[in-house]
Structures are given as C-alpha cells and as structure tokens.
Image (cartoon, rainbow, N blue to C red; front, side):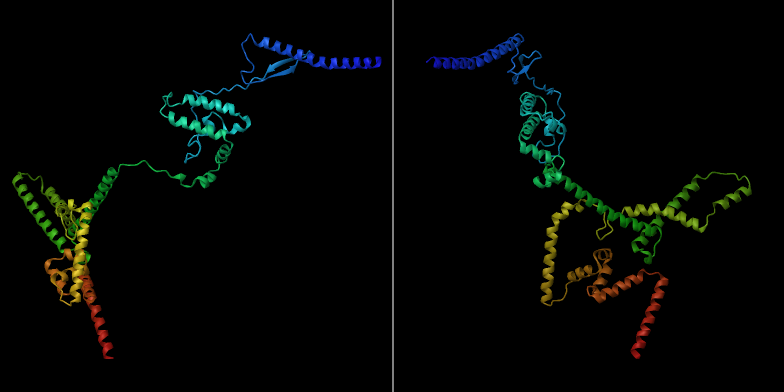
Length: 435
C-alpha cells in the first residue's frame, strides 16, 4: 500500500509539470502581445488594417517581440498618367491602339520581374476608372478610355489572355493567322452619294468637253500650218487650206493698200541731205526674195490663224464643243441611236433576203462605212455621188479608189515615176501572156 502511494505521488508530480509548462508559455506569449498592443495603441495604427500580419522576432537579449511587415508603396499617379503607349491591334481584340500594360501604368519589359499581384492591378484599375468615368471626367475621350481601362484589366488578370497578348506583341504573323489578313484595310467614312455622283458627272463632262476642244484645235492647227506653208496635196494640203490662204492673201493685200494710202496722205516734205545718203537708204530698204517670202509668211500667219479659229465646225465631228457634246446627253441618246441602227440593219437584211435593189439611203450608208466617217463628211456632194456610183462597198472597187487617192497625194515627179512603173508592169504582163 505504501509502495503504491509512493508511485502515485511520482506520477502526480509528472502530471503537474506537464500541465504547468503550457500555462507558463501561454502567459509569456500573452504578455508579449499585450506589450506590442500598448506600443501600437498611442499612434492609432492597426497592424492588421494594412493587410500585413504581425510576426514574432527574437531580440538581441533573447526576448521575443512582434513586428508587422510593411507593404511596398505604390507611387502610381493617376492624374499625371496620360501615356498609354501603342500596340498593333487593328481589330480591337485587346486594347486597340493602346498598350494594355501602359494603360494601367505598368511596363511590359519589367512586369515579369516586378510581378505585381492582383491587388495592385485592381487598385490601379479602380483608381483609373474613377478618374476616367464618363460621368465625372470632362475629357472628350473619357468614354473610350474608360472602356479601354476595363479591357486592360480583363487582359492582365486573365492568364490565357495575357499570354496570347504577350505572344502577339512582336509576332504580327500570328495575329494575322488568327484574326485574318484584312486587318490592313479599313472602310473609309461614308460619303454623301449625291455629292459623289455630282462630282463624277462634272468630271466626266469636263473631260468630254476638253477632249472635243482638242479634236477641233488639232484640225485647226493643221489647217493653219498647211495654209501658211502652202502645202501641196502630196504634203497633206487640201482645198480648204488653199482657199484659206487665198482669202488671207486678199486681206493682206487690202491692208497694204490701206497702209500705202495713209502713208501718202501723211507724207511731209523732206529735204534730202545728200545723194549718197539717199542711195545708201535705198540699198538698205531692198530685201532679198527669201526675206520677202519670210516677211509675207510672218504677215500671213496671224491672219490665217484668225480665219481658221473662227471656223466653228470643220465637219466629221471636228467642231467646237457645245452643250450637245456633254457626256450625259450622249448617254441619254445612246439607246435611241442603238435602236435606230438596229432597225436599219434589220430592214437592210430583210431587203437582201427579198433580193431587192439597194436604195439611195442604203448606198450612202454602205459607202460611208467603206471610206470612213471622216472622209465621207469632208467630201462634197458631188464627190459623195461619185463614190456612191463607183460602188465602193465592193472590196475591189474600194482598193482601186484608195490607189487613186494615194496617187493624187503624190507630187508631179512622183506621179510621173509611178506612171512609168505601171507601164512597165503592163508591158511585162502582156509579154508573159504572148509567151
């Protein structure tokens, strides 16, 4: 019994020691925490309010004290942050023309090293949203920037979107492959249809007027040159150029007579100083034949130009432009002309099937098609009748007619040589037939 009590006492002492150790540790920790709370209470700071947790640290004397870990200060200034960078995103998949990192005040190059947590990203997003809210900000682009801020927050806080955004920063080919190659093109702002149509009509009609004027002027310039230089038919002269030159010579002669008459009425008595001086003046006043011809040409040219430029219509469509040459009127008349030509052609083939003789109108149309519209319009009535009588719509007759026209354009010497060559050709042909 005594031995049992002794063992029981020993076990009781051990139990009491086990219970006493935790109680002493709890009292030591409680006293240390109370001391830390008393130190923090006068300054009004709460270590848990900042989001940091206190931790036990061992002092130099072996005692423990609690210190809170201070968070890293964010020096981001919302009001001065205006540089949002740039990024190639024409389809507005991410943040459009702006850089999602720069929108929230981060740098792409240093973002991976700094590794800002979601709290800092969210804090900047909220600050920027308050600054650029359309209801509070007076900036003209506030609404657009407010939307971009929200999109930048979505991209940076989503791991998948941020990874894709980083990969396409310097790899535009990947962007093209995923979002299409038409990103290089954008639709221009819509223009007023009426203004565009009016502009096109003015441009087309102006071009048509200028083109018609150039056609008329080219013929007038050629006629002036042919009349001034007195071209022969072989050189390209025509009856019109000869008539124009003769008319200009008559006007020049009349002007010279008028000037001579005025000189006679205004002459005053002059005393001759000496016979030598008068002889020298007479020799100086004489001109060579070449100089006289050049002087006549110089005097004729302005007269011929005035006469030629007064001609409004040279025929064959070479006339000064009028309101009838407007493209819009020609387009309006085009269906009528097409219907008229179709009706005439249908009537012509119907008469050919009936084997009826050609009418005068049909002969005129066929001849005009054979020689050309310009040649037909320039020809006189007698020449047109002659061409119709020769039935130039037949190819053999047309070839013979063209040879004759080319022969008329040759000079006299060339015509003689041509006749000799034709006689030799005929004689050789007759010799071959006899053999």
